[in-house]
Image (cartoon, rainbow, N blue to C red):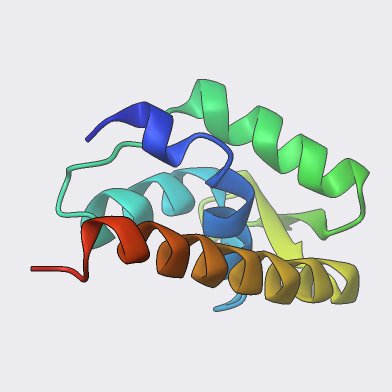
Length: 108
């Protein structure tokens, strides 16, 4: 898949995932891999800067949780401002898809 097609969509993907519940970094990476059948891999080098940017804008919040083995894991959770932003981004995405489909036609 052409990575240029995905450029700018990372916040939409991350916020959509976090709507399902809090997740930690590796869990996000694995969920993306599984849902795309391995056709898209979200690299740590792209994931964590995107999460930090979403946290800086208060669209998500993070917290540490201690696991049974004593290790700590950082979880990310969507916030109300993130939900509002996500809804706006979904509308924007749907408009974009409709516009492209007006030229290339619906999915075959």
